[in-house]
Image (tube, each protein chain N blue to C red):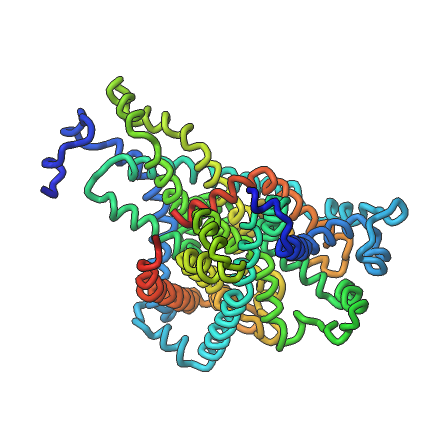
Length: 278
Length: 316
């Protein structure tokens, strides 16, 4: 700490480098959000100007509410994301508990089998998944998406959660066993202890689920089941030349994720760093 | 001595004799969902790729689809084009995303004031939907809007005011850089996690020896984070050869102009679902997925056999 307080020239360059890159990182987002509140002529004439009282308009948002069902898309995305996250957390924590707590014959084999999915993308099974969903009559239902994202999330979640569960002191579990607690009771006692890991899994699984385009496009393209990403993408294709509407749609799709990210950013960082390296 | 009965068990196990029902209860849901929705469909796809529709009936045809994919004019040319483009896409990520990500991680590891803010800002694009990112950049690079022009004119770089996404020669490179811009947060965080784990004593010893920033990086930081470099490369590889959303969002399923930005993901989509010029074919689609799986497995194998074996000597 003493060293870092000394002012050395490399620090200035480091700040400069980080500042420039931060600007590059946020520039498009800020530009989009800012311009979505401006009238058409100002969008083109002064793209970098902040909206003023004269140039402020909500025209784009009006077009949006009139021509696309964004509240429904948003609700669909929320249902799919929360449903998948709940399932991922429940089934993965149970599996992780079994794998980390007991020694049994198939332990290593099962752990390896589950970890295949970390490296092999589920997308390669799309043809098979679509056949399966047609057979189960799940096409154009949110269940199709929830099941696929759960399957996609399980491998990494089991991997992260079991490494955390191994860190829970053994004495605690043994004490509970001596008191006559069932294995299910012990599992439920452990869950609160690994809350940071559950948060990390939530944060790390949430982003790809919320943002996916591929599976909504293939499994649930119907108007009633469109997610916000699919809905926005269809809308953007249709209104390419209406800059107000396009910018408003982009803003609506950006803001919720950025807010979610702000809430979960600590867990996301710890999830990525611990999950991939342990 | 290997049988568990001979090992002194670490704890009394009263339920030893009974069938471990709780084990099944704990494992079944995850294993079932994962097997039915992920492993089975991948295997089913591979099986499908060995079949074809003969007079509307699914018939086993062996590797005929793969022969068609690699040998016929209709399929081979787009496939090799997509493979080549995908490789370029990957190389741009390896040459730009990962080195710049590493540089940012080194800067963040200096623990300057405001580090958490920098980290959050740089990671923001990563949480945005690829579709949204694609459209945002499409707007920004669109000559109609003029954002690009007003940025370049003050610098007297008008010559660079090109329709970057509309030219066959620049579309793929531009899309790769947009993807780099979006995804740089992940390698940055992974590198940062590895860097902060390096013990402080190593730095102090180096400083006592009078080592500068560059020497510290070359001699201490880089060798110690090499395993992470390997993991990041593998993640980049798998992610890139599985990419789809960005190209689809920006250039559509035809990955224009004139297939200049076509990669395996978009080719897979077109082969399976069809497009204006061609009807969809699930069997050929499955074969394209089979090729993608093969490419990814070869990449993983190279990593496991080549890189990781050499790494074991370096890791502490």
